[in-house]
Length: 433
Image (spheres, rainbow, N blue to C red):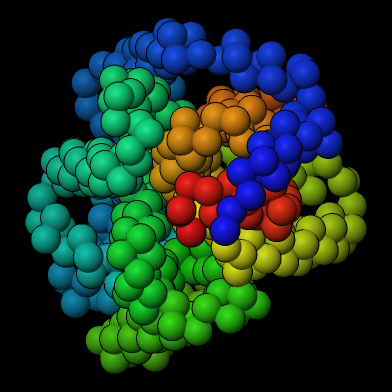
């Protein structure tokens, strides 16, 4: 039987309450201010996008190829259609193919860093012109993004009365802007995480693992997740992940042959050589994980790598404890996603699209548990996680990527309140596990 007096004492204990300045900041971030700021942000980023893309032709006002990151996948699909799959990772061939599409000199270097199965996925678009194929892909991607947001929102009863704010925040979400202008693949990663969450929610643990296993097309997202599932003894989900990832790799190897897969893995292993020093020097300011955080902060690459490895071990351990706890699924799945993001060694700003379910789930949990000791802190941290990706370019001068500490503290708070007695009492009181 639950002792409600004990619950109330745990919730109001000063030791468990957020500092006064955090509570004040949380009160200041009311729905009216959040809606207004999101509207201003949406007008700014999409206004800039409209002006930038208003130029005729393939190039925007800055001289970049419109939806340029879609170009390697488009070229891969063309090579597959032409029966030249063995040349997918030949730099000279891909460069010549890109020049054939662009039809004028460009400084853009876009190596193919995806597995051959990604090119196969886009074969239906290969016979179209690049602008037409890119527009179709972006349109479909936007539909998938908003479908994922809708499906997660639908599972959040606390957000039902805030559909307007959810919509405008989804439109203003900074990673969505970067994903759009680059024509990236991040929406497929978001779809995998969304499917996994819905499967976990339905207690279909094996199918949740299968959804996560499909992330092998972007393997850097699978650095942390299998370790978290292993350490937390989530055997069904781990088995589903291994089966799905193994099946995708086996199919790709059988379809394309070992030589193509060897070329793909060789490209990944020698990524610095493939991308080039000039591009890598700019990469950390566009990246938002522990790897780039330490690279920016520490001038010695060897020490930065050691700190990345150590901090990643800590984040995996923290997420595993949270995942194994009796905390609500919203907190546990958010911890799993945050670990996947932070430990990811190659995560650009558009990949932060996967944080959309985290923001929705935690916002819903805050609204459903407003008196919980962690509510005010999570409120402020969610706001910072939403906004800080905007300030990535500042790290060129500050050498601090602000988003990474915010996400790290967010994961730490989820861990802390997944193991504290007050959290367990609150979970038992609400009946949500």
